[in-house]
Image 1 (cartoon, each protein chain N blue to C red):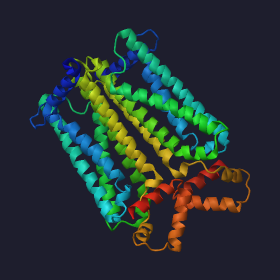
Image 2 (cartoon, rainbow over the protein chains, first blue to last red):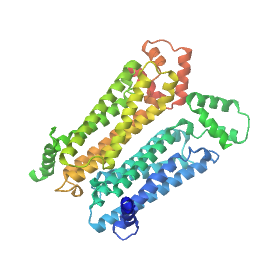
Image 3 (cartoon, rainbow over the protein chains, first blue to last red):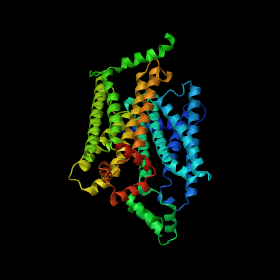
Length: 253
Length: 253
């Protein structure tokens, strides 16, 4: 029994050993980097991307959903910046050069693009001054760049995992497949799977938030106006999965 | 002058040194792996994804475009498999374990998903027996999984570059940023940029291949029928970038 449990015990020991957090320039300060990057830059950003599309948020006003979307993204950005400060500080204390790896290049580009995305998004979609035609023209770019940045961050995380397992595992090495390597590889697969799920939800027509007019009509149990009927008919023609949206609409009511 | 050229000379030497190809179980056999993976699994697959959407292919028949799309993907798959054989053979000769890294896990999953994608695509979209409703139901899944596999392969390449630069550069090391490291990092950025371009083209409504009926009408300079007019009107309502498509259509004529 003991010999069977050995790999598990060893993994528990290794994870526990690496798991601590501190701000002392040592390995425990480094640990803030993956922790905040994954929870903030991947998990929160992913939730922010699909928050409009979850049917139980359709009852909330568009403005509130915009504020939640922006708030989650700003929080993700703050956590990403703290995660960067942690790794730069760790490198400086340990005399490890900064910004030499492809992981660091792609990651920094993602943070810069993300900051631009947030500033432009706030100015164009939240400031009441911006004209409607500008919002309409910028929306497809905003959506594409948001999904692209999210995907880039996931690729960056997978490169970071690769680096950390090569540098961090010494005896046994990464190539010897110790339990910690298998565990972190599985974590990498789960991150990729989370990315796939977010991209799926974000690109399905059936998960798209219905128009405000249609939502208003559904909420008030009003008969559909001619304009709303036309809108609905157009949506049905555009969208082969309208049945799913109808079901979601009914559930929401 | 000589001292200024030194980094360039050194890089040329290093690239030349690593550039050779052979099938001898040594480092030159390994080189087939990134070469075929990038040219086949990334470049050819990327071209296969957007080949329907390039306006100068709209004049070709749908069947011919399907055959080109399938042919390029099958070629990409063959090159990906040869690239796998090269790296497995290299590992076996050099006594390096196979399949321990996240790069290898994600890469193998991508190859398996790609083979499934090709088999299902051939059976559903090329076999004349498959019913129309099946094609319509499967198309969104085929498109999403195609783009997801392509993105996964790019993430795998970035992990592979990270691994190779850490293991391959010894004196100076990767962290010392020798010219070869900078060069290969830039190659990684170019791969990511290529991925962004393919994803942009593949998701823009204005690059979508028009319906066969509309193409037939445009080719024959026939006046638009009522049905075609309705189709065109629907497209315009769905698609804010119809102007671009109109321009492309005119150019093609």
